[in-house]
Amino acid sequence: MENAVKFEKKSLGTRLRTMMRVDFRRMLKSKLFYILIACALVMPILMTVMMSMMDGSVSVNPQTGAETVMEGPENTWQNIGTLPGGEAMGGMDIFAMCNINMAFMGVAVFVCLFISDDFRSGYAKNLFTVRAKRGDYVVSKTIVGFICGALMLMAYFVGSVLGGAISGLSFDLGGLTAVNLVMCMLAKIFLMLVFVPIFTLISVAAKQKAWLSICGSLGGGMLLFMMVSMITPLGSTVINVALCIAGGAMFSFGLGAISNTVLKKTSLV
Image (cartoon, rainbow, N blue to C red):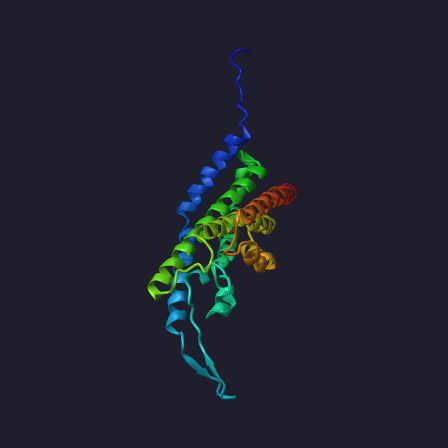
């Protein structure tokens, strides 16, 4: 009996590292990941330049004859949030909706397609049968989605700065400081931990039905979308960052547990 085979039980940390190593490798080899990062970088540049070029142009309603003057952006940071007194700045109606917060919807597409591919290819079923636990899978997917979302936010920020520089816009923070800008970005990054678990839960419930998970994730994300600018304004402080971290932790643990239960209680095909 001295030569009996002993099976080593892997710890949570070991299992999670293995799972994350595989997921990060898949993410870095995914064309979708680079497409989303490129879109996050290019979109604010194109939007800022085009709106600046249209500044002052007049459109006439053929039925009423009423003239509408297009107003372009006046400040680089309109792509990130509203400056103090920014309600009176040009182009604010458009940039209030089409700004950096769109990255939260972009990461929904990544998470949904990333997870649905596991179930469509049979990878998830084989993974759970051979070695991995459901909880490890959910944690790994949440972390990968969070990293993707954080990179999209940073790419959008860089694109906003480049777009403002190309268009010759002002970089004045209007009474705010660089610290407020940094806190704003940190708050948005940590707020991803609220959105990504929602997308992960919907994706593991929809499994291989990518269209269903995307529709559900975008619909669920839109319920919280309008709150993003309120929770993470340009004038953010440490309190905003702390609130986003606390909310992210609660959503990650709570919805992660629900996602784990869904995987255990439903079929993997």
